[in-house]
Amino acid sequence: MSKKENKKNKTIKKELGEFKQFIMRGNVLDMAIGVIMGSAFGKIVTSIVNDILMPFIGLLLGGLDFSNLHLRIKDETITYGMFLQNVLDFLIIAGCLFIMIKFVSHLTHKEEEKKDNKPREEVLLLQEIRDLLRRDYDKK
Image (cartoon, rainbow, N blue to C red; front, side, top):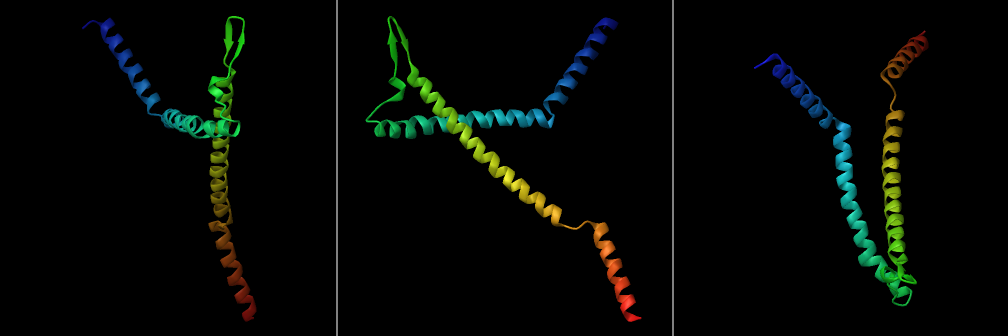
């Protein structure tokens, strides 16, 4: 093997090692998991909107189906019903995410309060010293 080929192989191995290190980083894995979970969550919300909420709203509005709403201008058709349905999807997803983030934030805040209420070791040690000094002073 020539020096040029050997150098090329080392460069490729180095690049592959860096790529492996990049992929195995926690942030990249967390982001990939988030994207996959978000996609699945989006499908669930879309199903809720399309299969449950939109028919119910259509019944309230006299059997109106949003997906078929359109406006014809000469030879062109503007299907604004699909737009309305997508806006509703977005609002429901945003609302669900807001509720989830508030819930997680609330749980995290409670855990931080528990940690803050716990006295540090230095404080406990100083309290013990104070109590010992007070006890010795009271004996005199």
